[in-house]
Length: 323
Ligand SMILES: Nc1ncnc2c1ncn2[C@@H]1O[C@H](COP(=O)(O)OP(=O)(O)OP(=O)(O)O)[C@@H](O)[C@H]1O
Ligand SMILES: [Mg+2]
Image 1 (tube, rainbow, N blue to C red):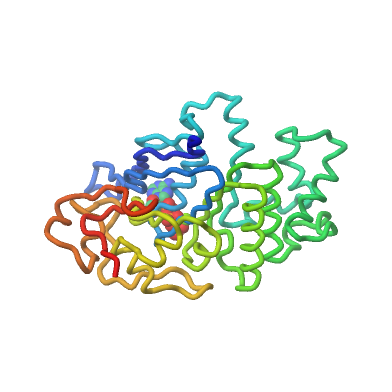
Image 2 (cartoon, protein in one colour; image 1 turned 60 degrees about the vertical axis):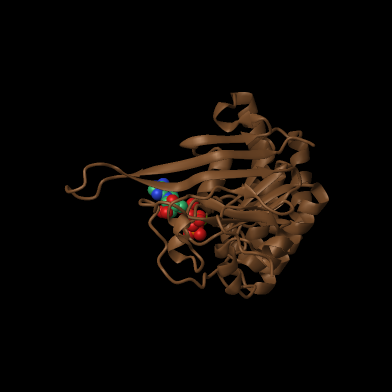
């Protein structure tokens, strides 16, 4: 078997919060990611789902090398991101593209779309200067937009058009991996479906590896072959989309599915109890306080992600049995 394209080995990310007030002088630490293990094979399409604050964007920032892991390692191929030399970093920047949560805000409002798309081509010297214009036209057509839009500015495009431009820009450097943060949230359903269709086709055609953050299990199941569920900085269950949706093993995943959202609704958990603070995680399982089937052992032992049935991993001492 080929080596994974990305491996996260017990990754932690801790933020030091500046002390508030004069009473508490010891800096408080917030664990945004806590023991994350994940492997991505080439061509995998993975949805990262989880409530707000579960660490989804932090995970993507670490995979992009924008922030270091506080502990553990992030590998691209066989190489630790923290140890890439200048040449490897350049290659990484070309091969791993990012689609921002806020597509419009990520573009310079004073640049024409043509220049926005030409920038990565120039930066990575992918072709002769004279061939750039043709390449830019091919890119905009690939995402289903007319070449006439190339002379416009970002402020003159609709929400759906700007997301497509963001996808075209991500494709400009011919990446192997695309990481996307909530790239269709806030679009109306028909535009959302168009953008999702486009992404799905592109991944299938080009064998791109995709990690797609979403609050929406409908989006996750439409776009991705695998789902990883994050809860308070830890992957609590991951595996093939069908398995996760049809027979969830982690009580948290099951609770999310009981509130299965409409295609356009954000994820809501049908759970009582408060999410614990990531600054002060409880002993034992971090989900125990909200779990309908928690037992005494759950308040003592922190379960690690372990292999379960076919391709699935679960972090639970008492996984839900199949019905
Ligand atoms: N720079 C930072 N400094 C301190 N805390 C941070 C920082 N960035 C993120 N956090 C905290 O880390 C945790 C995870 O945040 P993150 O942005 O990864 O969540 P998310 O799952 O992407 O949420 P959302 O769905 O709202 O985008 C949160 O508790 C957040 O407050
Ligand atoms: Mg986020």
